Every structure is written in C-alpha cells, then in structure tokens.
Image (cartoon, rainbow, N blue to C red):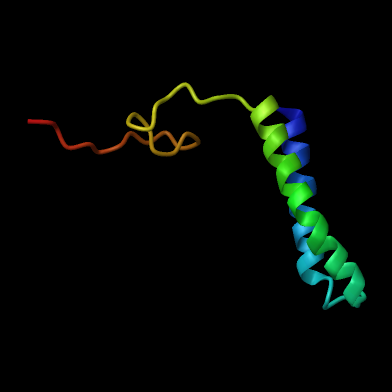
Length: 78
C-alpha cells in the first residue's frame, strides 16, 4: 500500500503544479509539455493502484463506501 500512497501524492502534486503553472510563470511550452505527459501520469497511477491495491472485502450492495462504516439502506425484495 505504500507505493499506492506515493503514486497518489506524486500525481496530485503534478496536477497542482500543472494548474498553477500559468500563475507562477511557466512558459507556454512547459505547460503544453505537462499537458502531453499527463496521460502517462494517469496511466501509471492506474497501473500502480491495480497492481498494488487491496481489494475490498465488501460488495457494493453491502457498503456503498468502503472507507466509511455505513451500511446501505436497501429496500427489501418482494
């Protein structure tokens, strides 16, 4: 799980720097280069999450959000 958190943090920092690039004085070609590299950041993030992530032990019907201890209100079937 440590690799997943590192990948999430690095990709989030990349997005923040990309969005702030025009405000902090990046050249246009730098912003465009970051834009062209952004799909690689997303693909790498997805690959790391799928490879090193931990699947949930609950189904979607049991819990809507896995990180919250909340059971879904499901109407009973007739």
